Length: 352
Image (tube, rainbow, N blue to C red; front, side):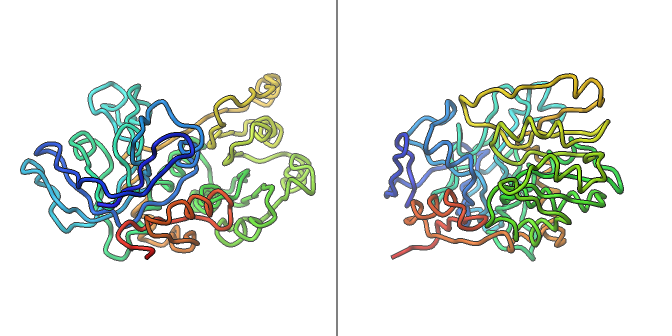
């Protein structure tokens, strides 16, 4: 099969490798039809990750068709279309047994310890089949639309932490794919006013159209804290979500929230980033709730597929680029250059 092998920092080669075999009779093999590029893939490519040991196939926003099943797998059949989520519960620790697998200390993930989706064929091991998110794709969705259930599941996890109430105001800092999904889905959770804060002028229209933001603030042109206060009658927002990798916005979020507001640090920071200068008095006197979120659990991935199928999130509108596997370098460049939104790699297609 053809696979993109990460061989080291900034080194990835597309080459023919042996087809994967079923690891055991509790596993499956997937024909990968779509694997979306995530910012995490770019970080692994440029900086590595302690859970990724080259040579390795990365990529974790995956959808495809079951190519082979072990004889003990009775709930899936060859030819069925399925989508996967990245986080894989170990299934036995207290966190995983309580349905909170993204808190698992082992922290298994597709495209990290387990082979990812930037390949024509992908082995899906017994732990993933038994405890992970391997969900059938609704008939009205394409593989590439279903692949976006993975980032949407992460968005659902973040919004659940925020406890948005009917009629509340929500600020999302960052208007990439996840940021726009956060804006759009916040409305479904009951937000009356959605405010997008961003730096890139090219993403302003995306915040309005994909995110459905009522107010769009360019932080390069105006003070984002003052602009959020002005848009909320001087009080600040009920909920502030940082959907970016800027440490500065983590500090700004505290000043954008109204008294008794909730803040969610959705976007992680690169390794080695400076810590924020935390004014704890803001939390104390405004009685703020500060939360974080990362990844998702299988329940949220299943819900994400249902929401895309129902049109609550129109996944196809987020997809702006498609590349065959042998053009993965161009796919990474398009994603990193922020020329569009979601970039899909299609391993079953050739660029020749």
